[in-house]
Picture: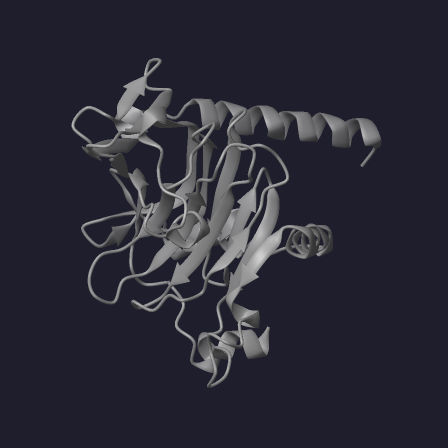
Length: 284
């Protein structure tokens, strides 16, 4: 294929992606679940904002449940002194043995970086935290936070750059989220008992209300209704994301992020696990 053809193909794919993203409608895709008016859908349902003040935070959830997919959302986080606040954006099922895939953004004092906290729960067991600084100011503009979830792996990405991969290692006895449909949830709330420097820095309510903004939601995913998936096994196999994995270039970018921006990895926390690191850490 010639360079010109490749360029055209990339432009077409980019335009298609943008079209899909902008087609999102927050009224159609989400329900505001709490906050007593602090969560708002604006701009012809193209923008959603969550606010937090001393009385309450706010949150929303997806109308659909998903079982595998590639899910993108653009977020602009609370600017200025966001210490004590947490903006959570995650997938979760229900019940005592729930599955969950987490992005959490831990606020900080003005000028100090946000911490991006990630976790994976399978059958009610989490304790798989990895934390990162970001290589940009997440409050200055919108950035895309993505979850790829297929039967082989979960990949967390930021602006298309993978930052974490959790592989399916069920064959080694490690549970993997693959049977429970999950909704998307997001909330902005006060967690100043732990969020910033272990709770040493408290929320400064003189800066309230705190606001986080969302746009360009896109779910290329299998939805589940009454136990029935929108994707048959044949359809799933035709979706590129269903078998997507990291290529060599993506792995190099992942390594770059983890080398330069990872600030906590449960797989290296020997003090936390004196009886031995979790099994998946010893295998990866």
